[in-house]
Amino acid sequence: MNVIDRKSLLYKTDVEYGDYTINHVEGCSHGCLYPCYAMMLKKRFGVIKDYADWLEPKIVGNALALLEKEIPKYKSKIKHVHLCFTTDPFMYNYKEICDLSIAIIKRLNESEIKCTALTKGVLPEELMHLGNQNEYGITLISLKEEFRKEYEPYAAPYFERINSLYKLHKAGIKTWVSIEPYPTPNIVDQNFSEILNAIDFVDKIIYGRLNYNSQVTKYPGYKEFFNELSNEVIEFCKKNNKEYHIKEGTITVCKAI
Ligand code: SF4
Image 1 (cartoon, helix red, strand yellow):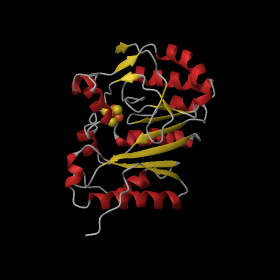
Image 2 (tube, rainbow, N blue to C red):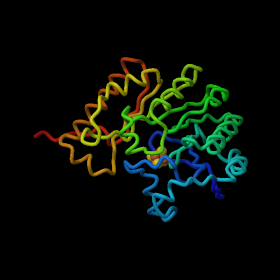
Image 3 (cartoon, rainbow, N blue to C red):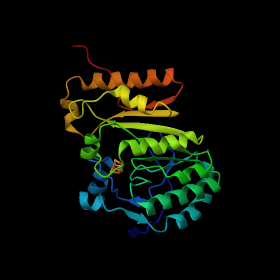
């Protein structure tokens, strides 16, 4: 596996539900084609050459050494650390990346820092043994494997993601699902309630629309569509006593015709 060194690791993110974050891998083998915003940015800034380059993850070899230096510096400011916003901490079939993510979470927990992690891979069972202060999530925007193979070609099959999350839930750990970036029906025609019911055990749902894809605005009434689904999430969460967060820009005011 390719290894790189970085000068720093922990940083404060501007992402709306984030606090501090860590991206200890460059690139992501999941290769999402919605497109992936992180890949677009890395390409724009010349960090990666192309899609093929993005698909070859490079692990940050000095990640744990950097943590040792940075934890004392930031500890008093950190509410929680999220893994990850520009890569995936549990990349499907990449044990080395999963092991490093677990080691990072363990180290942060030793300093009483809570972690959250989000993946399109499989959440390892070892996470059960790290205690229940952390929160783990999966991204789930469909249950259709044909869609997954086209848009998230190298990520874990949906049922594997859900099963791994369910095991952590059964172990008493707080779980969540990010239903983002959610596509319009001209991209995939699917039953939204089926997705909500498949993850009815989680503690929190984050919902957000698909951006940066020209197909979305070609769907007539796409704004109303996202408004309706946002309301469905809110109703579902209120009824089932769950936390929720609707991402900025997903609910919009529609012009009267
Ligand atoms: S899993 Fe996330 S970081 Fe990886 S390619 Fe998909 S959207 Fe990008």
